[in-house]
Amino acid sequence: MPRLAAASMVGTAIEFYDFFVYGTAAALVLGPLFFPTFSPVAGTLAAFGTFGVGFIARPLGSVLFGHLGDRRGRRPVLVASLLVTGASTVAVGCVPSYGSIGIAAPVLLLVLRFLQGLGLGGEWGGAVLLTAEHAPAARRALWSSFPQVGPAFGFVLANGVMLALSALLSDAEFAAWGWRVPFWAAGALALAGLWLRSSLAESPRFLEIDDHARVPLVEVVRHHGRMVLLTAGGLAVGYAVFYAVTTWALAYATERLGVSRTVMLTCVMAAVVVNASLTPLVALLGDRYGRRPLCLTGCVACALWMLPMVALLATGEPLLMFLGILGALIAFVIMFGVIAAYLPELYEARVRCTGAAVGYNLGGVLGGALTPIVATALAEHSGRVPWAVGVYLTGIALFSLVCFALLPETRPVPVPAVEPATG
Image (cartoon, rainbow, N blue to C red; front, side, top):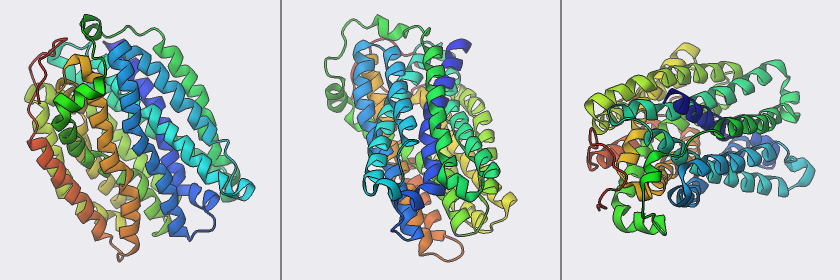
């Protein structure tokens, strides 16, 4: 289990590095380079629009790779998704700017971002299921939490590279070529991930299935449609909070408040490191007290913290901004620390890869795709403190709270290879 968990964690770190490095670039540099005819705010909104396309592609990726995972196994998903995401990320770093090829530049950016999202849509389901289906029932949340730590490492790596380049290069050098380096580095990371995953064993739960679903998506919609929608609604707040503090807040602080890129990236990275360290501890609580209570607690914490968070961000003081971001990510991890165990347990094994991945990635569309765009627009028409952003995030938290309240608890019921389908 330690070796398998470590391999899954490193793999998700690499794939989410690819996804996050785009979000950081969108907040810092893509607007002026690819949408130069727009105003600064409109350019940022357009860059965040291409960022959001990745989230729209993720549910499609979860359907495509979920079908592969439910029909052919969890392990092939890990290889195929890593290849798609890695190749498209390297290609982003090679796209000429608007000044060189005109309108073709943002169009290419849009297409490659779509492919990034497509690959990432399959990654989570494969990595989490391979770990969860190997894990003993009593510690399933703990072992499944390690793939959830991977995105935090990917974020720190992506922003660390951006931070180093931002500190070492002038603004002109960073805009000319420096921002491309993290995208090119994705190629080496993808090769390392493929080598690491080449020796992983297939899930024993998958090997026990005698009757594989012919079209997993059809079965998921027919027998688990309500479950998919409720999990997507429940996860929306986690995505909204995470991308509000790691993407929107980065643009807001650097453009509206005049905080340096280096200071803001450091604040966000430090908070994400704390978030990653707490994930296994929260998972242990999930193994002891259940998945649903932690999800409900996380939603309540998000609802209570969003207004204080935007007030702390608006101060422009690094320590207070860090505390605001840290509080939001702690509320986030209370919920997402157990999700990797909770979602697979809600679905029968023959459609688990599709059901869990579609619900997880639809939550990304609801909460992650629009949040940087909506928050940027709301902040533009707010005063010094963007209270409207806090109200928006609080509303999403309350919506997710209702969705989780309608879902069943799954602990400590073991997950058999085949379970009766339920509505």
